[in-house]
Amino acid sequence: MGYHPQLSKSAVPLTTEVEAIDERGRLSTIAIPAERPLTVYLDKRELVTLMTLGGAPEALTLGYLRNQRFVATLDEIAAIQVDWEVESVAVTTRNGVDRIEERTSRRIVTTGCGQGSVFGGLMDDVDSIVLPDAARLTQSTLYRIVDTIRLQQSIYKQAGSVHGCALFSANGEMLYFVEDVGRHNAVDAIAGKMWLDEIDGADKVFYTTGRLTSEMVIKGAQMGIPFLLSRSGTTQMGHAVAQKLNMSLLARCTGKHFLLLTGKERLVFEPQLLDDRLRVA
Image (tube, rainbow, N blue to C red; front, side, top):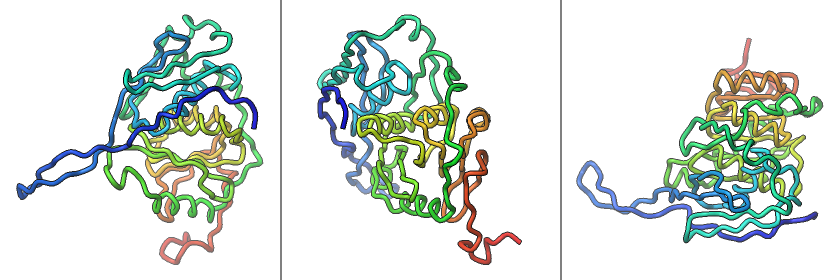
């Protein structure tokens, strides 16, 4: 393994218990997601406040900085220290961040629950991203991924109100699974974990329970991942960006159903997997 910055280990409980009264007037205790604010300070400069469950705050912060292009290499960061008592994370770089004033002057608030912020132009650097043409995903591996997610123990099954993201190998092995109040936080946390573990995205598959927005597509592309799957749908801009990048975008992935929208040459169809009711004449 290469260089690692100094990291705190500050994960916190992902759920909390509250009292609830049902339609029959019965009192019970239920679990709900423990949403928390986490303000990111980059070299003592307040950058953004992320609303998060707090399961992987260091990886979330690292992935956020990576996907927002504030840092290009891991060795630029000296330390990431989370302090939940003041709901903040202090990031210290080795030599500062170039043009920090200019790069934080424009902010776009992204769609979805637990809104996130994107600094600079949303489409900046997209033209420089090249995804691998040779990567392939078989239909059987796609079904394995969907089934793995279905069986995965999760905060969503316990308490609801969260999004999940996962990274899979080319043969459908789940490498990471992260849940958070916003899908953009979950994808950033996985980006951070990939960076720390020196995992390349060229032959990987990314799954999200949320919509395939332009932000999700761009972040997947920045991680070098050619396949982006969702049990939900896509937006017009998400579709347009995926087409531009020739990313393989698959929506409505449930059971044996899916919709392949872009990057169609990478999916290897296996018609024998479908039963007679689903077989296309």
